[in-house]
Amino acid sequence: MTIHENIAQGSPKWFAIRNFKMTASHAQAIGNCGKGLDTYILELMAESHSTSLEGKFSSKDTERGNELEPLARNAYEMEIGKVVKQVGFIELDEFTGCSPDGLIDENGGTEFKALNDIKHYSLLVKGESEIESKYLWQCQMCMYITGREYWDLCFYNPNFKTSLKVFRQLPDKEKFEGLEKGLAIGKEQIIRLKEIY
Image 1 (spheres, helix red, strand yellow):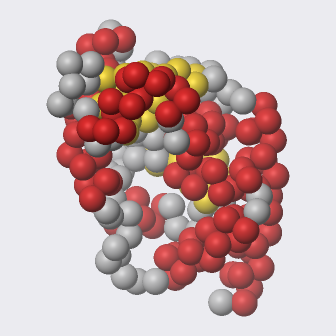
Image 2 (image 1 turned 30 degrees about the horizontal axis):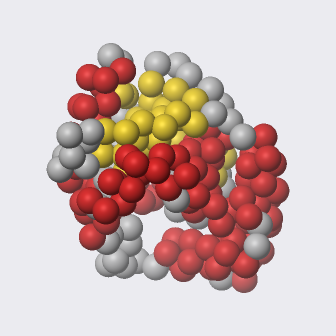
């Protein structure tokens, strides 16, 4: 495992390092080992070969998340009393990696999500059952890659009195098994597609 600490996420170096790598933001497709994985690998290969950055990793949700992430990080640090260490990218191998929102000490990590008002309120009143499964899978893949013992999934919305809600995720053996299988399948597909083009 290699941790790239001084690379800004979204920079040319960051794009170059994650080229041809399956990442945690697509963990659900990887772990389910179905048609979603096949589609993801095709998208990954197309993005890796394309010279255009237009539209990559950009949407209203991601832009809002990037804007609010520093506030969410500060709120989290105040709540748990620990410093969140920012890193650019973590490589497991030449085919796998993740861009975590932060690392905690030697055994933890964080992922921050900025939900809209309705989703944040729903999360506050209904709890963990309202969390989209793709976020849970993302945390699992980050733990799979880093070997860390927990990952805090944090939801932040400054429009509420309870602006920060934290759900601690622990390693899930079944999800790890799915990820291991999916990553092996994805690796084979990447190698095969590289031979073609």
